[in-house]
Image (cartoon, rainbow, N blue to C red; front, side, top):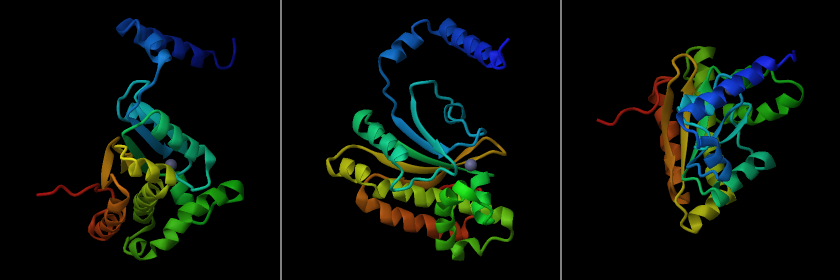
Length: 226
Ligand SMILES: [Zn+2]
């Protein structure tokens, strides 16, 4: 018995279950993928992209890293972005943060060390840029939640400012960039009200989002329009 036999057994049972419902499922998927969505999320094991939005294999193209950061020189993330936009022609890029993020909390507390400290420095840049918003929070817990939200706003910005996205918009490709936050406590994905579909729209969307955070309770998501 191998140590990971239970993993392989679970996989076989899963594949059998899918085939019982749809015998051609894997054969069809092996020929091509045509996802409409690129998900850029945190690597946290509690935030599994497909399960959260109840989408089967083939519907989400996924990139995950610690604290869902989009760095202009990260060729891993940029390669995913380029392939998703130029080859798969996804229609939506979703940047998905999550409340209770260990990476965000570590960055907030200055606890990152070694290699991860360099990665989380990007989140600390977000923290430092928005001290005035964070200082409105009553406690560290709320500050961490707010930093999750601010980090999503900033990373959506990095996607919008990226030349792969800018070029797509310039040639008229239909592409929307969105910011969501997932709550580990209730399993709900909250729309941050960020949605950009052109280079011109992003700056206004960003400023409105940050202004709104000042008056919006943490974990509240987008305010419903009356
Ligand atoms: Zn996380």
